[in-house]
Image (cartoon, rainbow, N blue to C red; front, side):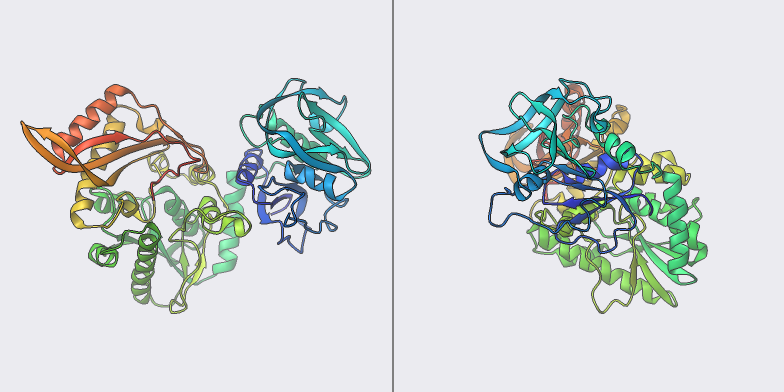
Length: 509
């Protein structure tokens, strides 16, 4: 990639959002931890320093050597980054009398400053810090203030280093995207060439060069990610791609047969493997979410290893890993906290002699869909809701049994089909049902019942990094609840999850 943007992660919860906003400007960027700066900076046109949960005044505050960057590449320092330059380069940072968190407005903006081009005074910004810059660093010029923050933005003369105390990457900063465009395009001269078409051309070329005439085995799930990965690989290597769709016993109702039928007309070489008994046996007695994920991941690897042995001279295992999987599993290789592991992230065991190829590893979900559209994949398939790799295992809280899977499959089918029937499916980013590890008292036909509780979950999102619960019509929820309780034996109570991400995750486990 040329004209890259380097984002240095200091552990902020918003770092991934910076990447999202940069990508929305059709500019390619990559996130690196602050203590693992790439040695070769020749492909980067600009650098963004993220915020951080640390205070620059703390003894363990991140303090990287930026001598290879500062004065050589344009820098935008966000929040912690702005305090970093002040604290370590002749300024002063002190604790705020009151924590500066939430909405604020720019009361003063210095005239004729390129960073604030087309941004007017009173523009709303989002603050999130407990320290304030009391004195600017050496050779700094104040660019903007708010009613409570005198030094809301500044630049350092003699170099293209800009610093802001607010977060342009969050939607609450109404002109945040404009500010990022001002910095990346007008100041740094970065080209807006990161498009789906460019990604397809470059990735197909790279795959041809990397794989050559070798054979690749790919695990299809029926979802958007693995399908787009398969079509990309097929475009690059054709008949040397071997696709395997595994029934892990944790799919949605009738999904195994439906997905195989779906792929018949796409020109892909697909084999269906029913390993449901193997997966359910591996999960027997496990209740911990991480243990369940690892058991499923190990079983997937075993199944692929068995199937790969049936393909002569196979060299690569392809996966539909995308950027949020990587971020949540390895915390952007850096200082952030691991949220949960993903079964398709983290490499393969030594006994499996296959190399890994992940053509979508650096894409967010919405980017995957745009690439799929560029490849001509069916609109209905691309619009399919995300479904977790571990399937219903992480929507059944507690241990897994065949009966629990049956109950949840029936509940989920009623919910998802109802969304389609009510023309709500495409208004929801992801939806599903969760079987709770509790029972509740009910009354059916004048008799007491003591049966399972299920929760329904529907969220709207762009890329899965953040999500809001969907305000589904009461009439729809009422009908869905009645249908579930009347048709699914073993369930007598339905609840609706109204939690957003953060603080909750989309899945319950």
